[in-house]
Image (tube, rainbow, N blue to C red; front, top):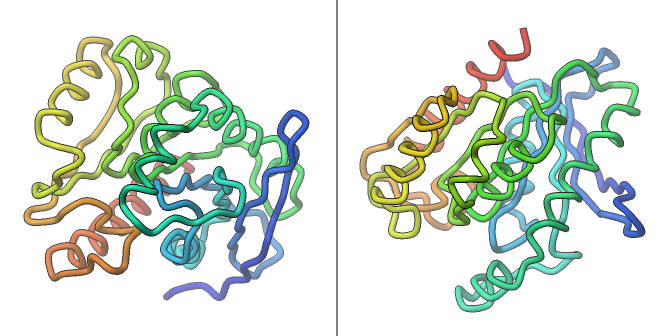
Length: 232
């Protein structure tokens, strides 16, 4: 049964900046495990907020940092421009800095924190996992930002990765290159493929055809089961 949740604006400091965020959590007093969710190239939009709520209803404290400073983009060329203009290192710092903030909250279980990213956010999550020990596990949804394989040497945390077979942005060739790098460096990972699903099948409600809906439901179930095992 889905838990009752409360959702709200959040904010934390990263360097000299204040990073706004969206936080959803079960409306209970006991501490819960945490997921930091990284949005795709549209920004912290309604789809990202909905996904944040989805995982909160499953029992997790969920924080989605806003890496685009309140801006949300709709047109594909605008979205792509923001992704290709992004200061990757600074974005990764903002993601990592969320952990110190979260550990101060009274309803957060402090031992382990996972990071989960969609599209551009999937690639940023990989960078955060490779460059920091702040996160103990990573869930990657169809990354469309591809770190150099050398970056993946730094990965220590296990990965669960989700992809659609009909994704024009995260192609089979890109998935195979990624898998080859993970194998080369002896990383622990699982890859889940969803037949007929396209890109953004979870975080873009506008693309919810039957295959995408099934992929969204199955991937959430698998992610929650995998994370509960990690947090146990």
